[in-house]
Image (cartoon, rainbow, N blue to C red; front, side):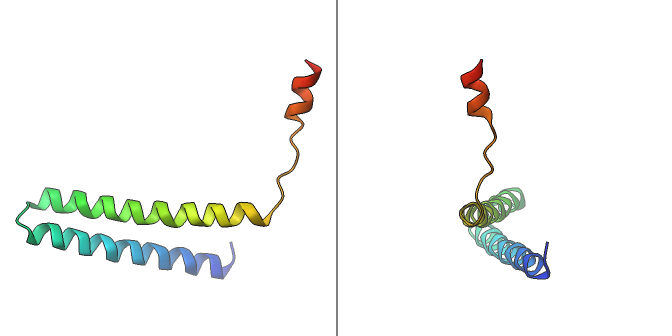
Length: 78
């Protein structure tokens, strides 16, 4: 990984944690207990990171060509 990749990942984690803290604080202020606030914050962090990693995966797949795996040729020979 290059330094740009590492910094992008750190930025994504930082943004996800900030989103999670905001979600947890809002949940806590609505009168829910700590357990629900932590679950809401964890869900928000997870969702933000899933969106980030899905975007990175979609962007990365378009840049490189997939090597042909010969799987189709093996199926035809069998």
